[in-house]
Length: 84
Image 1 (cartoon, rainbow, N blue to C red):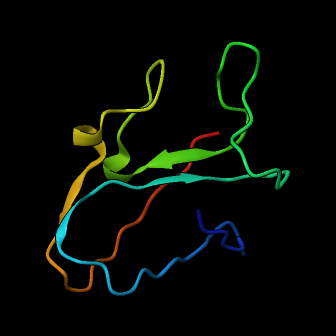
Image 2 (cartoon, rainbow, N blue to C red; image 1 turned 180 degrees about the vertical axis):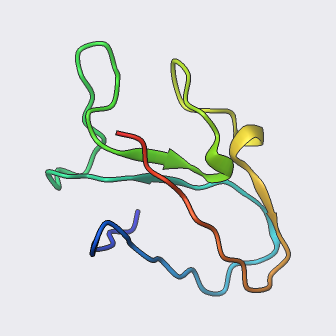
């Protein structure tokens, strides 16, 4: 887990020395900094979240295949939007 500061509604994270392969990312906005994604009594997130490939969360996290992408070891810029 990695914590990144948000500035002007944006954050940037650089990963270094990652071998080529198939990956998926999930991002949460831990607004109260308690180290977890807070949910309501039905399990619906109360804080922002997002998945690579803009994979949709329907009654739970999307599958790895829905969120995964190929990384060839070169520079790759991904943009992810959070859902609140």
